[in-house]
Length: 244
Image (cartoon, rainbow, N blue to C red; front, side):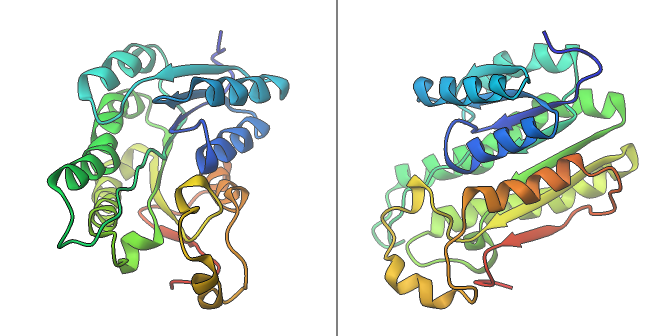
């Protein structure tokens, strides 16, 4: 069982890619992890084993963040018993298509997961954090949410929406010592970007390489773990200079 002395981080979408790297980095920093995932139980179990190998506790929570009832059922009781010290919202899907060909299903699926999922998770756990008057919330957006990307009107809209939501939320909860920020990765080596024409994108990145999940995790870890914190309501790009 998680002890009251140990910090707890809720990592939403933590079984693969950036989420996995974030969960492991926070565990290295001494957090026990509540790790959520939707489908890939084998991957989630692998992350759990790795976290336990670091001497930390990992609780796995399987649900669809786009489903409010399922989100509440998975998180509400845990949050009532113990407010998470950090929440990292990393859930996200892509259904890329040009707007002229984009189906309503492609639009709705991305918005309901990437943006609706933020509401479902944060609405469920926020009261407990306000009650304790402490906590960190880090939301993973994207360079696409900052500058837009052709073929990603739905994805860019959802990620831009997260930025607006965080900026507004920061104004609501700052006085309760809850720090809320956005981390916006650029092209990061994960399954989600495997289909991209990387030979065309690489010359656009000033430092000459694609991002790694660990690059993002290090920034998230700082925002969650750093004792001396005065960063609030900000968007931190982790993109190698692709967007400024």
